[in-house]
Length: 396
Image (cartoon, rainbow, N blue to C red; front, side, top):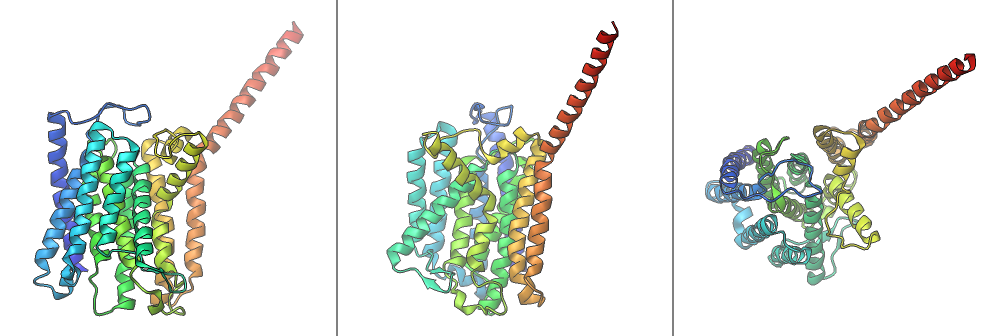
């Protein structure tokens, strides 16, 4: 784990340094778009943070490859270099696509085509969903496996991109969810392959954690630099790839059902860490289709917009997203950890989920409660003044 921590720190340092460079260059050459109607920020802000994050990712993979000559276990990850090159190639394509969109505002069909090409490159080189961890179901054929993989990657990329609307939102949500997912992949390997603690899923996840840590200081409210489509799509691509690397290639038959709850955890946790992005994506698609619009047309109806409209401040809205993400992902992780490592019932994890859900719901709906209380108070004051006026008129 120490080596992975060092890789994450390297990614964070490189990403932070490149973020400062990108920010200053963007200001110098005015590489930022005009403010759009749906935007929350009030001043033009550079959107090329994804370039810095990609630089950090490249540096981390390069350092890991160099270190693999000294660490045989790490060398296992690079035993199939075409997979690594495919992931980095897909990431480069996505970043270039995102940068072009941030500067020239590409149409949604062009962006979607580029996403399918990037996802297809990863699936083509063997990072695919081979198992559906539901009773050990195996995907019927190689082309079906590739098809499912491509659609899964494109779905996650768009889900992450859809929630990118507030300062620090995507970086923080990705940091929390990938931190939890890294612990899961690390512990899963202990159960399925105790002799090998190094795997592709853990490496991708820890690099993504480092990239988010390095980028977040410049993206915290009020943000100096946005990750833009380049960064959001990159985060989604790497999150999906890491989930597929562990979910689609770990046969749940190797897990002891009596020891780990449940055997389908490899497929539940990726959905849990993506709960908020997937929910926002689903609601947006339904909303736009009902309005007769393209599901990829922009609007101001995302969950973060609704939180602001409810009366939450910018910071409070972001922290609420963090809270929901942490509750969903940690609850699922606990259903894995508690029975396997502490011999405790998974019911404690469900209790944590229930309590966390209630607390998050109360905090989320608090402005509505305050607004209702203020409305009632205003009505009472208004009613009292009306009664007093009526008594005065009657006396007159």
